[in-house]
Length: 196
Image (tube, rainbow, N blue to C red):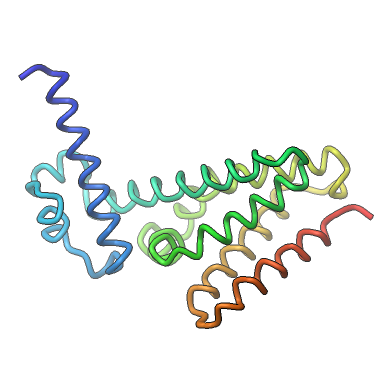
């Protein structure tokens, strides 16, 4: 067997472990999933899992990174489809709300993420993905004068925190109208940032 084939098999094993652990984490939650269950679902040995990941938390970190990158890519694509910088911000923020209403994403990204990795590491991962896009959008709007001159970091953290809290609230809500109300409230909050 050539080294290229072995490398391809290793990558396939890694992807299978990510896929199956993501499915289990999203449906059962991190605390309810054991390594035995993950390797059984992936059809590999524990040795194969430990070849790729140091621990269950390390595997979860890789799953969370994958989820955050997917959400960030969705937000960026939605925002980039708009020509106006303000619309890029507004559509990007709304895309985050919409994407984060997926219960599987909520559990991994917003519930288990901070609990498993700790607030500081979870926050750093969030800032490296969606937070980076939000910072770029706000920086451009401040530079253009659409938003009054101010430090970007506090504004980014306030908006990010508000949106994270909103999607956690939506996850617990049983009212279908709450999503529409939340989207409208977000639009009003963003509009209040504009320079008059």
